[in-house]
Image (cartoon, rainbow, N blue to C red; front, side, top):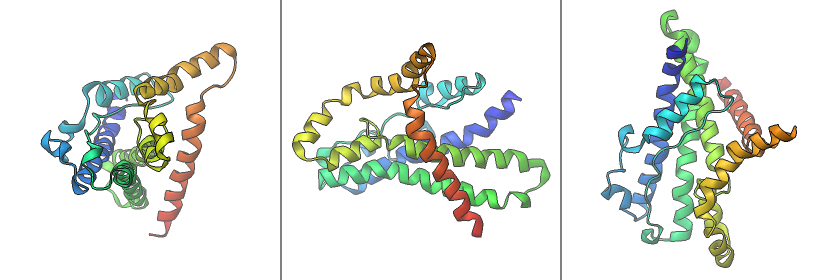
Length: 224
């Protein structure tokens, strides 16, 4: 069943990541920064945004290994915030463009699930699995990316909202952001396992909001 399982994840992953990154690029372009456009990232072509390791290999290995979580990443869209017309305000708009786009696709997936019974039996299971995965993945990406950690989108939003002295201090943490995420994702849970304690802090911060948001979308689209 593994090839079938993987086939139900490929499209949701490519759509979620591609449109997330493209949303950042289009928002930055509309607000005055053409950096992403100059390097060819103002595009809906998945090949422009996918990272071979982060988008394909890592999630694929986690799926095959039946990992309890799915993690991956795309190539970040380059943005020169100094080119934006109102840098602090526009940085927030560029940052939230990705998660908002994911929520839009999650809503579409939830709507699609309402009409799954109308599909031919030969494709019904495959399409419904794609929609379920798209719903869960887009919600997860939206919530995860809004964590207040640089270089995630939530970190950009917080950076734009903080007073300048605090923002400068917070910005100095960005070079350590990936290390912090790896520690929260992998190292802390492993350490907790050795100590007999649940130290999966990131799951506490992401799982509950994701589940609540997913259930809300399902209920909200039930009227259609």
